Image 1 (spheres, one colour):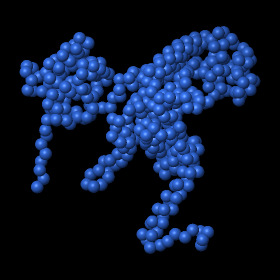
Image 2 (image 1 turned 45 degrees about the vertical axis):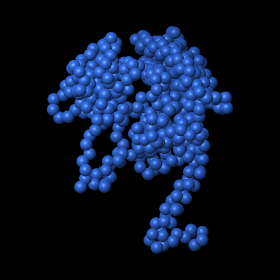
Image 3 (image 1 turned 180 degrees about the horizontal axis):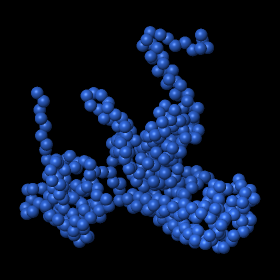
Length: 439
C-alpha cells in the first residue's frame, strides 16, 4: 500500500509579495504577532518600510511575481537589505479557484513558498545586470535607428529616387553622401552620382538615371528630419559603446594577448575591440563556434554572464533556454515533443546564429542543411540552436576551444553511422550487407 506523502514546511520564515504599479501587498506567516497582511506604497520610503517590517517579523526569504518592471526596484532593495528574494513565474503561482484579490494572491504566494513549491527565476549577478541593461538599451537604439532608415527610403521613393535599386546599402558611405547632398540642396543627378565611392556595381549613368525625381519640398523635409534623427541615434550608440567598453574593462579576469585580431568586423558591432574584451571576460574565444559573431556573444553573455554553475548540467541549461524537445508523456506514451514558445533572449540569439549557418561550409552548417532536408527550417533552427547552446556551455565550463572538423568530416561520420545502423538491422533480420565493389 502506497504511503501518502505530507507537505512539510520547508521555509517557515517565508513571505509573499503581490507587486503592483500603485501598491504592494505583503503576507507573512500566520504565527507572527499583529497583522499578517499589510499594504505598502510604491515609493522608495514605502519599500524601505516594507523591508523593515519583514526583518522585524523574522522573514529571511521572499517570493514575488515578475509583474512588468515593477518588481525590479523592490527586488534590488530587498536583496540589498540582506533578504533572499525569489522571482517566480506567474504561471506557476495561479490562485486556487474562487475569488481573486491582491490580498489572496500574496497569501497564496507565502503559502506556496513556505512549502518549498516555488522555484526562483534565473537572474545573473549584479555586475552582469549592469552590462545587460546597457546592451539591451543599445539594441533598442539600433532598432529605432533602423526605423529612421526606413523613413528615409520611403521619402526617397515618394520622390521617385530609386537609390535602393542601385545601392545595396542606402546608409553606406555612398548612400549617406548622396542623401546629405540632397538635403543640402543638390538636385543635379550627375553630380549626385559622382559622389559614389568605388566598388559599387552600378555605373555612374545608372546611378544618375535612378536619381531623377520630382523633388517635392515636403518629402525633402521628411528626409532631412529622418537623417537628423539617424545622426542623433548614431551619437547615442557611440556613447553606449563607450559605456560597454568601460563595463567590460571592469569585468576583465583573463589575458587576451594570445587572441588573434579579427580582420572582419560584424556590421553594427561596437567600434572598440569587442572580441578581445569578451575573451578577457570569459577566458575563451566563443566566436570560434561557427555562427556566433561578436555581437551575438555579447548579447548572450550580457544575459547570463560567465558563471553557469546555477545550471546543474548542460541538459538543465538547454531546458531553461527551451531549445530541447518537450516531454509531454501520459500512459507511457509520448504525446508531443513540441517546443513551447518562450520569449527568451538567449534562445532567440542562438536561433538567429543557427539561421546564419545555411551557407556555411563548416560541420555545423552541414548539420543544419541535413536537418532542413529531414524536416523543415523551423525544426532545423531549433535543433541547431540546441547544438550551439551545448557547445557554448561546454566552452564556458571546460575552458576548451572549439575546433571545427569541417563539412567533409561531418558527412564521413554520418555515413559511418548510417552503415552501422544498416548492418545492425540486417543482422536482426538474419541477413548481411555486402559492398557493391566486393559483389
